[in-house]
Length: 369
Image 1 (cartoon, rainbow, N blue to C red):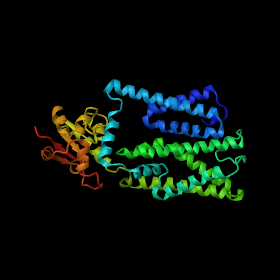
Image 2: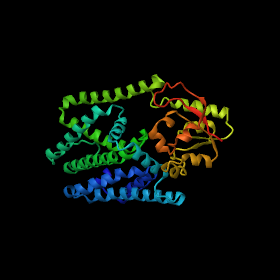
Image 3: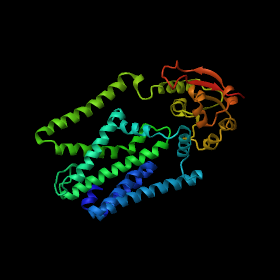
Image 4: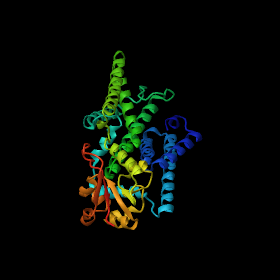
């Protein structure tokens, strides 16, 4: 896009189209980034009069839109629904757990590995400072913030920077509202936020590099680099020095349970909500019942009839953490809020001592015949 802003060409437009297409094929919600760039380019066109930027951003948006349509068509052909069942399940869970913008903000700051409450204030201040600098400072001065655009005139370069910052901000706001309805919000969702977050960070750093006296810039750069390096080293030490400080330490219990089932196979089908690790080490025969990779679950879950599905599939055992059965919201989200069903489960083996807090007491249960 930056190249097209200066020297638009068919090759550049095609490249942006392909990037948008494959971005949406990899994740359907990727399209917020090209959409934000297009909106920012369109809005700022009244100032820049740069048709190349608008056309380039539209080519990326068109590719992303086509990718989403292909995903919808694929879903409909194989499942008779335009939306993926995993998306429908997460939307249903979001209705149970409610809207939360706070967890989205926390996700944003996982990108840089720090607590969001303090950094949120800093980033908001930096963002307004950068935008104010673009508006107030003289448009003819060629003070570069983003590197690599020496061929651009001062005013065009500043407008490019403003376009990028505006689009990044719009993109973050878009994900802030959409992801607020999603539960659970996994760390890998931050993949869509990395580019817009770092556009703002790099622009803010470039802004301060320009306003600081030249004899002090090296110290500012050294300070920022030291902070970033310190954050990276701190996170690596915290996670790897003690396994209990890792993001999901309880997953080693799932590994243990999967290996046990592989060595001691039960005399019937097994199901689990958290079936990934367990099923992999068991040998691949654990039935997923959370609905994210099992399309058949959705209709049973939303109607609170999961026990019927288990009976129809002749599932004889269930293995999962205790809170999957004791927490009301989890029971509702899974469609098994049924006291008769829960009281009929017979515990056979517990795999841990409850040492990992919320996720504890991984238990193998036998269902009644």
